[in-house]
Image 1: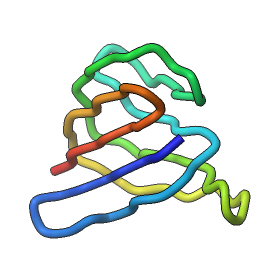
Image 2: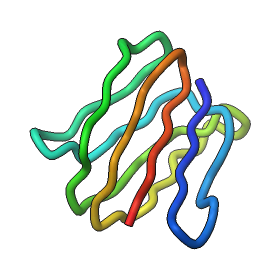
Image 3: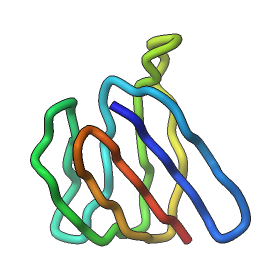
Length: 79
């Protein structure tokens, strides 16, 4: 599964991941490979993901944003 995290200034992360945890407006949720398509808004919190390359968990603090999940691509626009 590919994760893309972008802000107005930069590409924060782009790469292959095993799992992504997101702070959704209606509650935190997890995206795994093969997840159903969805669009959600994000609240302040941390995006946590496990990179496929090293198996390490990483996190990115966000103030909010939007996520789109479709065909094993998780696109996150943060602010």
